[in-house]
Length: 172
Image (cartoon, rainbow, N blue to C red; front, side):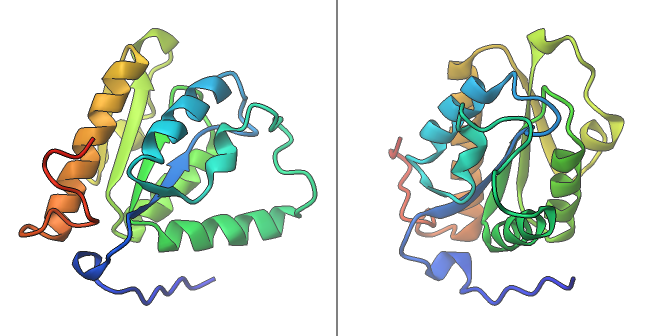
């Protein structure tokens, strides 16, 4: 599948950011409450395209109904359309790794958050990628600050004169 996205430059947009959130589904749902809280925070900056990842009712089986192919195609369309990717990578997931690989190939800004108390080492393919910013965190407040700063920086790069995405330096 060849992904092609024709989008207005980010600096020309009037609406908020389109954010893709990556978190484990079939790899384990232990962190669903963490995802839910992060997604709620991210929604203050724009639209989280795949907010269902934080739904506590979503099981390890994933979405009920859609086929694996339709889930893949839908998620790849969201990934192509997003302005940036935020991933919570404390629970290892093949799907999240796949999404992060595609995000870097699509030149999306990527932030990976890894809880220090998880006790799991982060994959070298993620931690060692120069195209992925990885940050260890120990509390949700700390993660929120990191996400806010990443979004502000991404918005400034999109439009150094206006702050991009309708965000001012004082927002959030």
